[in-house]
Amino acid sequence: MRGKFRHGDFPHSIFYSSHQTFTIKNTGVISHALGGLAISGMNSLEFLMVNDTCSWKTLDPAQSCIVEIVFVPSTEGEKSASLDVVSDESTISVPLSGVGVITSSIDLTGEWQSFEMQKVGRDNLQVKGTFLVKNNGPEYFRGTVKLTGYFSNDDVYSSDDVYKAQKSVNVKGRQGTTLNVNFTAAGLTGKYLIVVIDADNIVAEYDEDNNVVVSPMMR
Image (cartoon, rainbow, N blue to C red; front, side, top):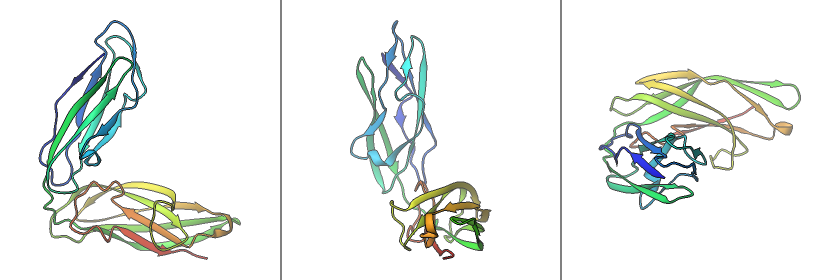
C-alpha cells in the first residue's frame, strides 16, 4: 500500500488556505483496508480535513481516494503537523506546513432585522426571521460564512446547547439572509435562540467576541 500525494505545503494565509488535495492509491496487487485518517502534531488544530473519502475504505488494486485539507491558522508564524494514514499494511505520515499571517481587519457580526415566533401545537415553537450578517471592520471581506442556531436555557452559548439548524451565507460587505428555524421542546423550556456566526471559525477576525447573537424567545 502506498500513498501518492501532492505535497502538503500550504501558502501563507490571511484567512484560510485553498483546499489542498491528497490522493491515496493502492499500487499493489491485493486489496487493502484503510483506518481513520487523522491530523497529528504540534499544530494539528490549525489544519482541517474538509473532504475525506478515504477513512475506513477498502481500496482494490489501482483504486484511489482523496482527502482535502485547509490551513486555518489561529496565530501568526510557521505551523507544522502531519496527515496520518493507517492501513492494514503500514502507516504513512505526510508532513503539513504553513505560515499564519493574521493581519485581518475583518469583524463579522450580525443582528436580527425581523424576528417572529409562533406556537405550533402544544410543544412546537416556530421561529422565523431575517438575520443580517455584516462586517464592522474596515477590511473588505467576501466569502461564505456558516451560521449555526441553538436552543438554550440560558443566555450564554456553550457546547451543551441544543443544535437546531445551520445555514451558509455569502457575505459581501453587508449582506443579510433569511434564517427559518423550527424548534421543538417539551414544555417550551428553552428561553433563548443563539446564533453563532462563522461557526467553523475559518475567518481570521480582530474581534471574535461579537460572533454570538443571543435573543430571548417567547415563553
